[in-house]
Image (cartoon, rainbow, N blue to C red; front, side):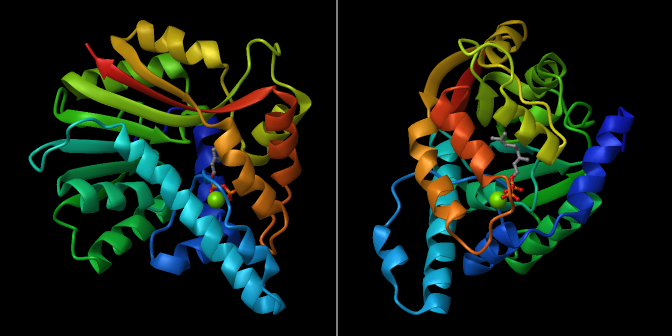
Length: 278
Ligand code: GPP
Ligand code: MG
């Protein structure tokens, strides 16, 4: 695999070592393991369960429901996908979104990650479900996958664009997508109206070893690479309940207050962007 920079080695080290209960315990609820956040209203009754252990379990199941809802919303924006189409999950983590896409559309999905641990974990999940012939995870760089040009009807980044230069990324996606194909990302981006990255956004960057881009950078880099936006959805209000619930759970990682402050203070948005490859 072509790891392009020493930075990417550090990112791979982070994900090879990552075993956060907030990801593994949530994944254990249904056997679908994600590396993204949740959207939608919280069922407040989970906070009222009297027994402490049962309340914790209920909160975990609720957070998992919200992260599944996030992936479902992303898949809703892929357009008309048919079983003969191919899909690419760029930065596929433990495989959750890819497996949901295969389940929904019945088509072939390739996922790429620069973390060998994540690739192995995700391939094991595919094998467990008996879909290894359709869903394959590769140890590969999303900027240089080696996959076939024009072969993909849709590509997505589910919270993985903040690890790469957007011009390099969209040039790579544009090459892989068929004409008329669809690109979708759900991402956190900083608000150009606020200015540059706020202290809270910088705290998030340091926590994950990532570099959150500005909102405007997405549209500049898409326009430069034949990707024409069709939908832009501000999910900031929809993701706040997930963070409020997570901050009260037993699975906090310490980054919750930074997200709450960044979103509430308006320096940061949670955004879905869907674009056509023209
Ligand atoms: C991690 O998800 C997601 C990222 C590192 C991308 C950063 C996202 C932004 C919106 C800025 P995770 O599920 O592995 O994180 P955690 O362990 O905190 O749940
Ligand atoms: Mg998580």
